[in-house]
Image (tube, helix red, strand yellow):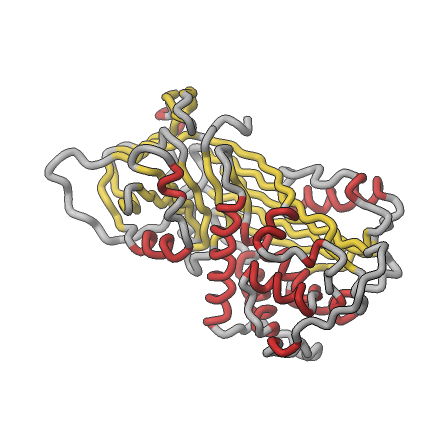
Length: 418
């Protein structure tokens, strides 16, 4: 069984200093934010869903390059984008522009809301064979100054219930939030926040969780799992258990000096992509990684006869403080005294004090899967190629229908999370 979980949390605090008034550049505002509270609809234009998915995927790769290191990576761009879409609803002026530029959110707020509501409902629909769910929550004081309109938008389009907490009691509040996180991640993430992260200036907390548990459409046979050498970045050798398929047809392509293998999960709605260089350094492949190139490579996938598929079992658990990364990507004002989040409480005294991300992944013989394409490539006159992931590789968990990237990461040390 395979489980993918992530949580993004933002703590938005009240600035203790006074800041100068800034109205922002209203000339760039194309759509107003007026909403009709009598009619909630999740019927976005088709291009609006496409725009939201493409924006999330572009952000996926921007953050990937920002997190670049020689270590394991794993995160959910969709979880991060979902959480900041709620912040974006309250942003104004320069802060609004910066968040939109980093995450690529559409200017049409009503279409943005409809698209997120539509995708949320799609992902939280009961399916046979796997579990994919997302959840949002808004944590505020009982007598909070958060605007009713903001609460209404979050509840009706982002399905974020407003939960009353006492920020003057960090111990109790952190326990309540962590219990919510644990419930929505099937017990995999239990201690997201420490009491110390809740400060006297805390005004509200936004949380997002996404959980995925799926079985491979074609599982690996456990009695074929054997130990072999994995070559880490830099050439260090470690021995890890490798799962194995024998000769067969798989969704596969070779492109620009590397290989891509797709394995579907039960139901064929979601899949994992494994991307590995033919030889040499993973860095050479990573330099080519963009959303546009991924689209081109995915289009090249076809049922191909492979002599074998061998992939190491791996578990990863990661934590990221996103603040510095997001500031460097182009949204510094949200995290300081220049923040304008007046759409949340009607004042310009709010700022984002923390943005943290926690992700977990466990891949083994029974879990994870790929699409069932029917095209068949003719046999080879020589021995067919094999996909043997015995060196660092990239992984992407995607929604097959839209191409939306739910999770993304790099495996450099398969046993690091055990």
